[in-house]
Length: 123
Figure 1 (spheres, rainbow, N blue to C red):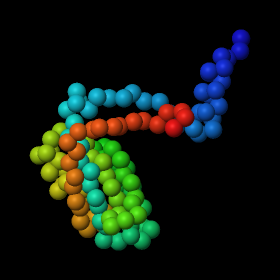
Figure 2 (figure 1 turned 180 degrees about the vertical axis):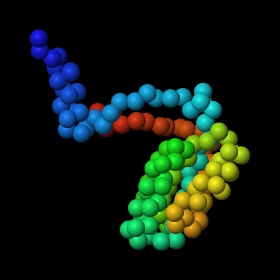
Figure 3 (figure 1 turned 90 degrees about the vertical axis):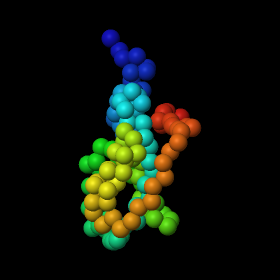
Figure 4 (figure 1 turned 45 degrees about the vertical axis):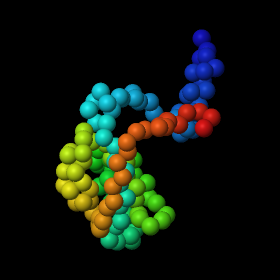
């Protein structure tokens, strides 16, 4: 019995690294973590060892959904999800500020998600 064309195509996409995995999409409101903040981070040191240390530390923090190195007036942009403003304030002081080489931060709180998409085939 042969595989269906769809199964064969999915398998090829997986083998070629186009499909990285599968996951459940969770509703952040139902989970009680619907407070989103974007945080500009400026590092005190941008040599390779400092960047590597920061990247490794960020990857271990579950509240940081996304972290992007930026070419601009700051070094990183983080997307952070917490319960509310009070929990974010604590998280900023206790966790983000304690990440390696953080010199300063600026926070922007999202009022509403107008568009959030996940990549799919064809994008």
